Length: 235
Image (tube, rainbow, N blue to C red):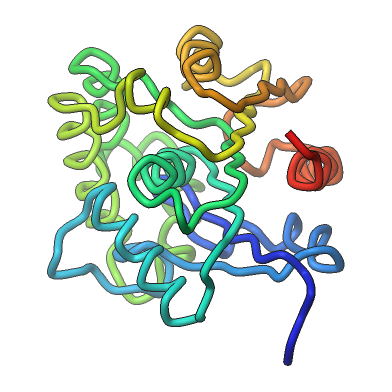
């Protein structure tokens, strides 16, 4: 069926899945052609023989666009999904419309990666936050959630050794971008987000009030409002 709605693709974060987006997509479905995918190794999608990395995930987005005959798409990326969205905007600008990121960590080095990797210990998660472990098991069907955690730890460790996007890369991104973060985000700093915001040629910076890092903490109607406002603006 033909639709005049602009397509928007939602990209989940590390340890996440597309199953986290139904509340947000329900708000936006009347206005957009909604698209969802699980990166390989997440949700219902098996691990890929190509690896587990930002470039691999970006290639999976491109394959999705081709299979759905989408020549152009807006991207909403939460956390790691936002990093994938920026990577695509940098390297495949002809496919990407507006880019909206929420809670995306941009400053990757050995110190910041090391801090995150320490939290990605399956045994520690099972012991300290069993409710989160149960959530991961339910989210990543057909695979051991522990494997997802270990693969993610290696991905972040690799980013710490070699960040894939530097400020000079963001300066080359032609897509209009809106960088969003919560004012109570304990994982992402204002400084790193503002540095990228200033480097981008066409960008806006939005702070969500009383909002921590987890996607579930975001005010869904407010988030949907900002997405609609940004994607309909003429910049």
